Length: 119
Image (tube, rainbow, N blue to C red; front, side):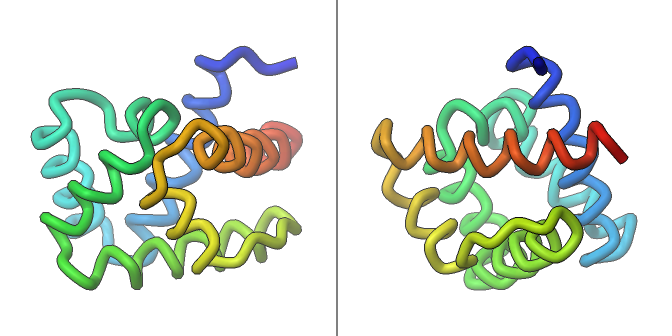
């Protein structure tokens, strides 16, 4: 079984690769840099703890492009990992920020990490 730290490591690497492949290496790393600076820590750890904060900062960095990027990432995760969460539902969970939403997002991220651990 994965520890919380291991889940974060796996989905950090998976999402970083997807962001960079979607935006290009330089632009992807720039977005991650700005998120890290704005959040004052690893954006993937914050995503695990407070997805609403990550969504808010993504919209500050990317504007409406944040929704497009999240939609693209969720679509790619679904395809690559055999998962099936609606990108709109994922966005709703990120924006909501209540404990129930956070747990549902964590479940999705755990499933993604499990698939990538086995790969």
